[in-house]
Amino acid sequence: MNRLAFGEVAETSPRNDSAKTPVWKWVAGAGRRVFLTVPVLPITVLVYIGLAVVTPGFASWPNVQNLLGSLAVLAIAAIGATMVFLVAGIDLSVGSTVALSSVLAAIVTKSTESILLGLATALVVGMVVGAINGVAIGYGKLQPFVLTLGVLLVARAVAYISAAAAAGGGGTAASVGQLPGEVLDFGRSSLFGLPTVFLIAVVLVGIFAVILTKTSFGRNVYLLGSNERAAQFVGIRGGLLRLRVYGIAGTLGGVAGFILMTRLGSGTATAGDTLLLQVIAAAVIGGTSLFGGFGGVWRTLVGVFLIAGLANALGLLGMPSWTQGIVIGFVVVLGSGLAVYLHARSGRK
Image (tube, rainbow, N blue to C red):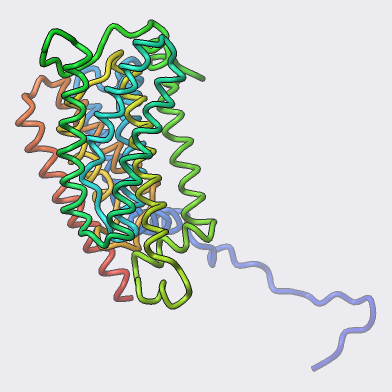
């Protein structure tokens, strides 16, 4: 082989443009990766396109704003539920926590005319419920399903009793209204053309996405959920970590309760009746495993969009609540089945 003299430049063969990857192949590959990572995302996009075509007014800007504002409560509550699922737990009390927080926050806001004190009340209520769950499950070793079911019943009862007591005269009211005008002003305000409460939800999703993926706390959460014995071997204190996770979930439930109060202009004890199933559905459809160690809050947010969009469109079409339940339930089964299948398939590779 001849050596090049100093200063000479080797000739190279011309670049073969035909060897470049075609654009359509690159797009197909990227789409496949997205589908395998967040399988419900392309499904959600297709569902929204279909809903916009068949549902009058679905794609109108006022309805879009209403949709984004309404899904904020579900998104915030679902963040905490996702974290609980990641440590192989379950929290059936999330809906009742939101309801109780909204009722007590409304009572305090109404009596003090201070929305900040209402927020503080909702946060404290959520923290207390989360701490009870965390201590009983993390240190008391109680079964999460049974324990949180009991907390659900107690929190729901306290919410109804508190709303009735606030109504006075031995009434049986399920909501606390007549709040200061600034409550609704905040709940229906917008920033950059988007509902403020929706932006708050997105910021919280982003914060906890970073926490779960970029911090030792987040890595410990995934490890504890996927292999508790290995987590103990490396020194992770499972009881303390579960206490922190359930505490965070309860606090987020309090935030969701406050947001709900500002959206409705009242605190309602009936909020948890349907919210629990929607939260679980959003997390499962998004691809978070109920057995721990797999999933994430961005996935859950996609599930939230799918659930909220379907509920919104079915309401615009005038379908009764039981019909909505059938449709959403059918989608939940299909979406969760697809997520489980793709997760198992990726695990075999």
